[in-house]
Every structure is written in C-alpha cells, then in structure tokens.
Image (cartoon, rainbow over all chains, first blue to last red; front, top):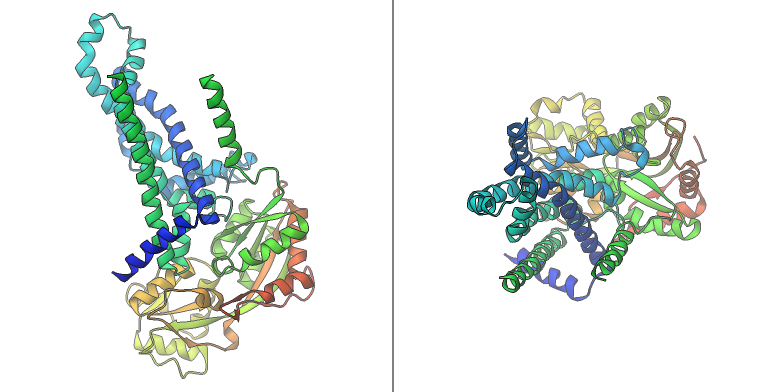
Length: 234
Length: 274
C-alpha cells in the first residue's frame, strides 16, 4: 500500500528533524501516562496483594468489580471524570478540567483496576508457591504482603506495563477531560484523532507509527532494565 | 544522596507538566470548523503578542460548546447557530453576543452526481433531488451548528429526511472532518462549512457540487459566559479577546488567514455587544 510507505517515511522524517510540536506532544503523552502508571501502581499493587492474601467482608464483590473494571470504556470514564471536575461538579473549584492533571486522573481510573487485578493473580500464585516456606520462617501476615510483592517484583513490572499500554493508547477519556488543546493538553492519540478529522490521513498514520515506536521503546527499556536487575540479584 | 537526586527529578518533572501555569489564559470553546481549518492557530498568537493573554481552544460542536459554557467550563464560546445563540443569551447563560465573521455552507458529493444537484439553482431543490433519488446523504447528527443548519434546510424544503435514517440518510454523530471522511468512503452527499471543506485533504472521491445560495450563509458569533452564574469566569480577559476579535486588528487578522491561497472566513463585525 502506497499510503503506508508514505506514512512511514513521513514518520521517519518527523523524527529525524525533531519537529518541535511533535516533541511537545510526545513528552506530554509520556508524562501523563507514566505518572498515571505510577499512581495507579501505588493504589493497585497493595490493593491487589491485599485481595490475594487477606480475607475480609466484601472481598468477593471487590474482586468481581475489579475484573469488570479492567474493561472500563474510556469514554465513560472520561464522562464521569468530566462531570466531577466540571465547574458545576463537586470538585469544580479546583479548576482542573482541561489540564494534564485531569488527564492523569482519568487514566488512573482506567488502569488502577488493571494493575490491581493482575497483581492479585500474581500474588495469589506466588503465595501458593511460597506459603509453606514463609510460614516455616515465621513470617507475620503483615510482613507477608511486602515479602511477596518484593519477591514478585519482576512480574509486577509487567503488570504495570499492561496498564501503561492501555493508558498511552487511550483516546476517549483524555479527549473529554483534556480537550485536546494545542500546546497544553494535546497528546499523541488526540493529535491522531485530530489529523484524521482534518483528512490528513498520512500525517495521522505517521503519528500512529511514532506512537507504536514510542511504546516499543519504553517497553524495551523497562524490560531490558528488568532483565539486567534480574541477572545482578540472582 | 540517591533520594535527593530522585527528588530533584520529581520536582523538574512536575514543574514541566503544567508549562502554562502562572501565565494568564482563557478557555475558548469553539466549533470544530474554526479549529480544524487552522484559523485560531493562526490568529491567537497575534492576540497573545499584544495582550500577553493566551487562549486555550477546545474544539467541539456548537451544541456541546453551549453545554460547556452553561456548566462554566469555558470563559467564552465561538459558535455558529443564531437561534441557539439567542436562546443561550436569553436564558442568561451568556452575555455580550457579537457577530464576528461569516463564510458559507456547501454541498459536496461524488463527482458523478447521481442526484443531479449540480445544475440546481436553489439549495432546497438540490436537497429535494437527493431526497427523491434516495441518494446516500451523510448528516453530522451531533447537534452541531452545521447539523442544526442542515435540519433547518430539510424543514424549509418540507422534507423529512430523518425518517430514512439508516436507509439512505446516515447520521454519523461525529465532527465535520470525520463526516467528510465517511462521505468520501461511501460516495455520499453531505453539507459542510466551506472552511473545513477547503482545508480537508482526504477527498479523492468528493467534489463541491452546490454553493452560492443565501440560505447557506454561515454566521459565527462570540458569546461571553455569564460571570453571574460562574464567578470564576475570567471575564476581563475574555472580554479583551472578544473586543480584539471585533476590532480592526482582529478583523484584519481573520481576513488575512488563507488556506492554499483562499480566504476561509470573512470578517463582518458591526459593532460591539449587539
């Protein structure tokens, strides 16, 4: 297909000449989605581990909810976050609508359930494997969670990046709460949607190719670091 | 030591996250046509240079623009549907409506023109031709200014096209550009504002078939969101942008904006606060 080869050379060209607008958009995409992953992990890792290890009232319901929320539709999340952050909404006085912070909040809502649900499974499996050993060593229930989280850290990185993949590729939520404002809240996915609606299919596709390359780079760096760390520690 | 470095990185990271913080800015919710055509990207820097006020543009359809204004999520709106604008002001959501510029709507479609609208003289006859031949027509269907205009034209022609929704009348519920993409792929007719049409690139199977008829006039106006409902509205900054748009300088900036050598918007501000 001619379109694809043209888009591909355009993508390469945009990268080579270090287009200023492109760098701005790429930087914001990374900042928003990496921050969202960080916050979602701070919520999702302990939550997932707690659901795997401790019994408490309502746990079954919470697990079912988490598994459902793994597939939350981004537009619905965008709409709900919009209604909360709107000037007429409960948190309107913060003036967060149409800012990168609003986009981070929306993405955290989208990916925290993913990180939590995957972490729950990871910890569940690890607990099955190490439970007797840890018990013999006299681990307390409170210490158990920290120990298992640390022991499974390499798998947990993969869980976090399942969340990152969803965050960086998502357009519905950030479009509603960010507004795709040039030089302010425009990220890769909303820029692609805009160029498509301008009928500039070639540029849209070129941006799409760059977005995929970006995800590939981030994932490779993290996986490489993970591999190196694994070699050093073991 | 390790942690201090981390803190520095974190500080730099969060400071760069909101680069526009501290600068004065207003939020303008505008129709997609003014943003997609590149008009606002072109004139906003000229205003910013003088006033040091930045204008953040959120592009949505006219219907949603008004909703955002009503909720207080915009300082001002730039829209194009007179009846809705007057209602917006009369309900007290907006103040100081000023007409700023105009262009016109055009009907585009497949070059073969199976409904033969090319040689019609009146918009209503052109639409009747499409209706009678049941040729594919793509409607915005999104409560935008263009959509409202299209529905008005069908009503004026005494035709109820919407009853054929899903048959030959297709409602996309999407922006002008997305709708043109669909019309292009389907070989369908559609109503577009001229600005979006001229700056639209993916039109290998679409040509301009009908234009230049008074009902196709497309007037853009600016309305400030009423600060009595929403005290946080930056009314002074918003008013200063509105005043600039209708000033000689602003009007000249609009006239100077061209795409591929063609002027897309024609300034016609008469006096302030009509």
